[in-house]
Length: 134
Figure 1 (cartoon, rainbow, N blue to C red):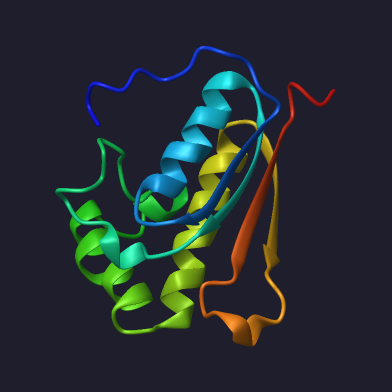
Figure 2: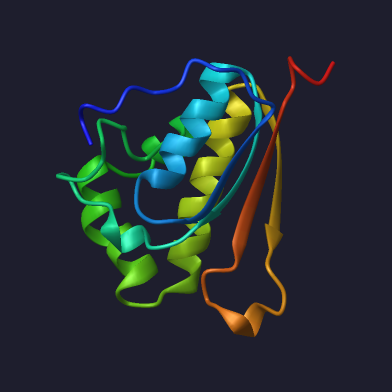
């Protein structure tokens, strides 16, 4: 909802569960802007299109941006990760997010929900804000 105003209250941990498309990146950006830690469980990467990026640049990290364009990322990689069920493509998207987080001052840990068989979308990213946690 464009009329929704983000909260200005402080918090220690941003949590995003079943974050479809760019919602994962919104939660991560909110944590960065508030100096909070973050836990996200990304979901449907195929929902990321040029019309649904919410203004975010893809790929998120400088490293992956050096490998492909936003058009390739959204048109091929995100579609492969979701619609085509390509696990390696899904892993690359979450790795890209982890690199973005590291470049922006977070210590990053990647986890998987268990049991893995319960869902193919079992990735969890934990971002610890280096500045806040000194």
